[in-house]
Image 1 (cartoon, rainbow, N blue to C red):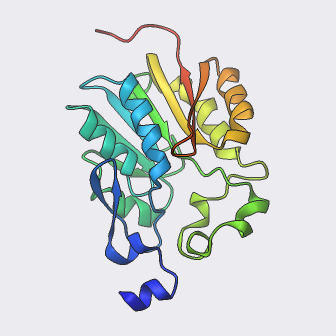
Image 2: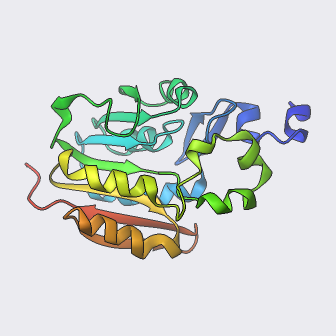
Length: 220
């Protein structure tokens, strides 16, 4: 294990788990490691949710967000999706609900359409030209698909925002982590999909989350 760590593997991949929101999240080699700043996304989502909500974790990676929200919202019905087979295999050990392999919304069952109360996503948001500036642990040992967000870092975010109204229930919320400098453009994408939008920030965790809400009231 020491040799693997010295060779550059992230510590979480070496020991097989990451601490996240008070939980142990299984993390396999080659799978994106949950970041502590993403706990802010979970807290923001949990503050908007209720017990029994339908929660969708897109770009789920190891499934840390879905697992944490299942823990925070007792009885929540949690679904997760990732395009990477290794991530899906790992997430199925963490998420107490179905984990689908595929591109964003494509593998979801039609019965979830317009029923999702909380749609959360830690999408890849590093601009392609800045991948080379990431720490070697990320560049060499995490999948590029979990890091590269396209020329301005917002390609996947735009796709998620564009498709969200088809899956959100009335009064449902979309929450996506991004960077502080990308927040204005990200919020514009949310607004372009008809969502009432605001940006929240945690200086302590250096975390920025864009929140969009669909018009209407959630059923009691």
